[in-house]
Length: 178
Image (cartoon, rainbow, N blue to C red):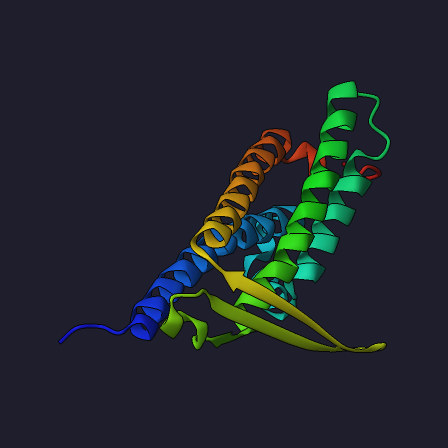
């Protein structure tokens, strides 16, 4: 039995989405680990409960806030520069979280695939100013570009996480009580 174009496109899209989700989950796991370190070893169960209730955007916002607060008064030029780079990374991760929502919650149309065209992802979301929509053409080139971008962010999150570990526990100590 031979596969038709739509079936091949569907399998290819499923493989792309699987790869994308696994890579993005790695980024989210680093955010979770940073939050766990900030809340302390003794609060593992409590932190896990909190983390299950937080959206990606909330995690990004909280991690950014914690690190900005912890490093806000440093006179160390390296830490100041690092924090600026970390904030830029968090902006990119926040943008990627939106892309993730588009890809994971989108509706996929395989009609064009029957004619040799790309799969199309449609994403719609209600907003205060009306309905927002986005269309993503799932060409091979576009999918490769999306995977390269999210992979780069995952690598950058690894490096940021390692730097944060090297500063722990001093980074998360209470400045008043130590």
